[in-house]
Length: 126
Image (tube, rainbow, N blue to C red; front, side, top):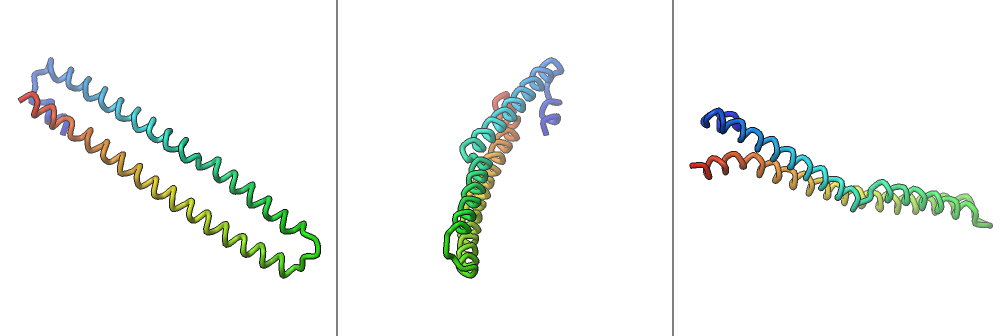
């Protein structure tokens, strides 16, 4: 689409438009990267997962060190905690998936706005 748009201009203008197009794409790419890094830092997914692993390990050790605990009690406690962990991790996963969907929508909007830019330039030059 861009080539069709640019081909209607004089050669001297084509080079200028192409350079402008490259700057816009580079700027969009940089903005997307910055947005992605910002979202990753906000969510701190890896740090949260590491903390979860540590908490799970601590819980396992606490259950096993209790004195006068029968094997069945330990099994029930471990099973109960595992179910709780599964619910918690599913909740975390849903939140991350929702955030990913929001990010995809943002990227699509940015890409669409970038695709619409040559049309806007065409309208402005007429």
